[in-house]
Image 1 (tube, rainbow, N blue to C red):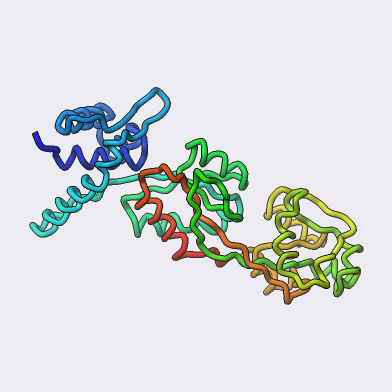
Image 2: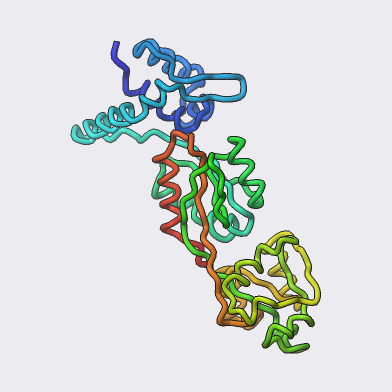
Length: 298
């Protein structure tokens, strides 16, 4: 008996989600229907396609090998239906994308409705966390992909550049009225606002600064944990901060924040990270392309 289109579409949906339950939701059928279609497909092909435990689903080597053939077969059926005047709905898929808090709120979340129009067969859920937490969640299969600032050098992951994110050092006018900040030595009278003791915001700025500014030493450093907290304290005159230009563009325009050492404007690359062993590469590539087409511009 030859495989049916429903069986192949079900197989591809499970291969994309690595979940029988998620596949059932995407296909709008009962979980028992999904299991039966897989059983029938495995019987027709004479090979197991998935390894299932109580906690996980993984493709067998035979399942991995079937993916491109199944995709071509389903695409061919869609073409046939279109030629006959009947368009079949594309298989649906879901993906959990890890994003840092500020990028989620100011960049990715506003794009979700647009993505839904462009790719109605794809549902993207957001998982918010800091860089290290997202990296760990990705490796542990708790999320499917992540948008990370610094590239992750992990042999288990692929990392593709998205867009550069520009940064600027700024302070509130009230802080600059109290004391000038024109040369590196002036910094000793100011508080630096950063996320963590490793100074992840200042480091790229120092790397881009000319030699005369690389020895800048602030009199005090506050670790505030998030860019949103840094933004708030900087606006209140609580210190000097290095923040993403799209995040502070409106504050610069309103003169609520002013550039400091304006010639230094580093750019850090955002990266799309996913597991190398994830078989859903076309879907992941599509999400990366959507992010590249709509960079964080404020």
